[in-house]
Image 1: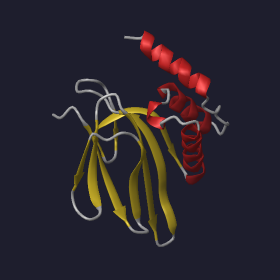
Image 2 (image 1 turned 120 degrees about the horizontal axis):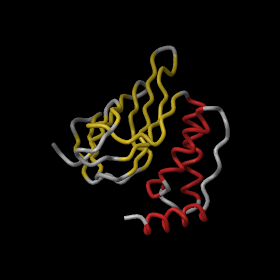
Image 3 (image 1 turned 90 degrees about the horizontal axis):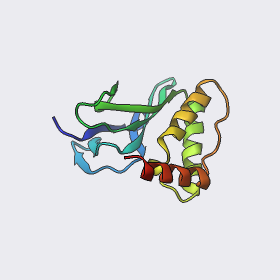
Length: 154
């Protein structure tokens, strides 16, 4: 079993779009014109966006922010993700997905890669949006606290 978490991306124009919004892939494998597989190292955080439509409009709009797990560690299964990952955020429905995308843009506007943001921030966003409340914005001071906490924890 590979130590890497693999995510299959699929793009069929105006029908299906599975894409990575952020994250650092360590490998990429092109399967064909519309499919490829990205691999992530254990511990890395990435956002996986899935969108599907039919002749009548959007059927699925979902975002998952996951942490890739090492072999032997518990994980949750997620479609198109092998073997799975630690779920930090999992939301569906366009209004909530759009809000998460806006929050990701806000983190990037601070000059911070969202893959480096505190994992508990993504859990906070998940919890607040699940109950239709506004999450707190990510700040540079929160990020600095996360970096300091990460340095102090083995």
